[in-house]
Image (cartoon, rainbow, N blue to C red; front, side, top):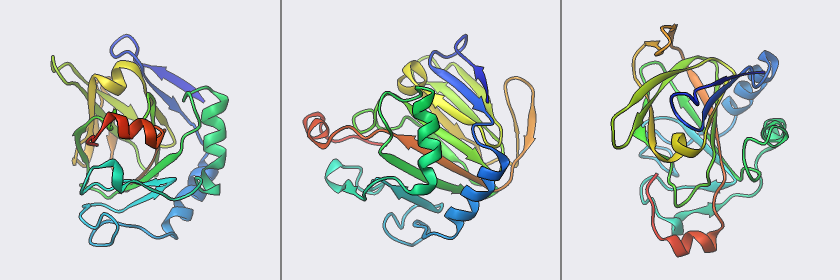
Length: 211
C-alpha cells in the first residue's frame, strides 16, 4: 500500500493506493454481482438511479430520517479483511457498522454532497473497484476545489476538513483528468463506502439529517 496525502491542500484527505490486491478486487466484485441489488425500481430505495447494496444498517434516501434506519446485522464476511485492514491502520476511530456498495455504470456519477454529519461518524472511507475515476472536492463556503485521482483498488479517506467542510462528487464524464494532470478512462466502477453510524440514542438527540 502507498498513501498519497493531500494534507497540503485539504486537511484530512488522503488516498491509499493498492488497498486490496487484484485477486481481492476480482473476488469482491464477483461476490457482490451475485447478490441482490436495490434501486432502479427495486426496493428498498427504488428511486435510486443506480444499483446499491447496504449492510449493517439500511438508510432510506427517500425519507432521510433516522426512524427509517433499520438494523441489518453485522457486516458481511466478504468485507471482513477490509475492515480488519481499516482498523489495523487506524483509519477509523471505531469499527465501521455501515457498508454501502454502489455500482456506477459508464456515464453515471454522484452529485456534490457531504455524508450526513448527524448520522455518520468523523471518518468516511471509500474503496474504488473495477475502474478508476476522479473525485472532486469543493469547499462548501469558499469554493476551493481539487480533482483527486482514485485509482482502481484505492481507498480514499476523508476526515477533518475533507469530511465536514468539503463536498465530494464524481462526474458523469467518460474521461477524467485529475488536478495533477493525470487522465483516466472510466468504466463500470464499484465502490465500497465504510461509515460509522452514531448510536441510535445519540442520533435521536441530534434530530433529522440529510445525506
